[in-house]
View (tube, rainbow, N blue to C red):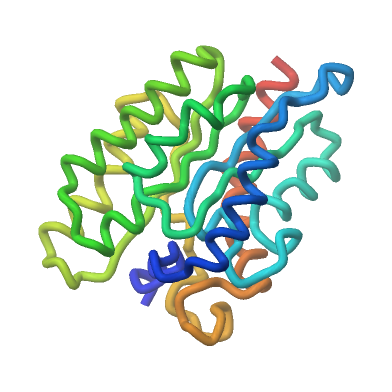
Length: 226
């Protein structure tokens, strides 16, 4: 059942919502952190899961993680650079623009739409690697957190298995922190998804936020205290 959850990544026919989120994400992602705040910056970079398709921006998991960061007294500004329907190729094309501002922690949530479309996994792997290479080049001290994804077995068991495994392989190769499966406990559960059955409800986003927070909190605390 969990494998079905990757459909929450969004599709290309969500033009109106995507455009709205593009404008929101672009204006936020392009705004440099205020020097006077002396805060570190964490960027959530992904597709409709990150953008919060179908829910209010304040209900999407990056905003919920931001609340947890503030409650924990951690000194971070959160930037939501999610875009519905985004593929790894699309993410690669805009990464340099998003990284006009320095980043301390970069959460990468892309690849689901590649898998759903059956795109060559060699290309997905190459694009994700290039995105992480760009982060390293522009912010060498940044910590990269990679969100693992899974897809239904429509493309065959070999493709499905290789898709699942590529996230762990890339995390290991790049010394990145891995979230094993972003949609753990949400995917395929009707009451935690919108009527379309593919996008998390506000309650679903709360669970995703908890999943992310379990991995992210020690990273943020270590950086701030180190």
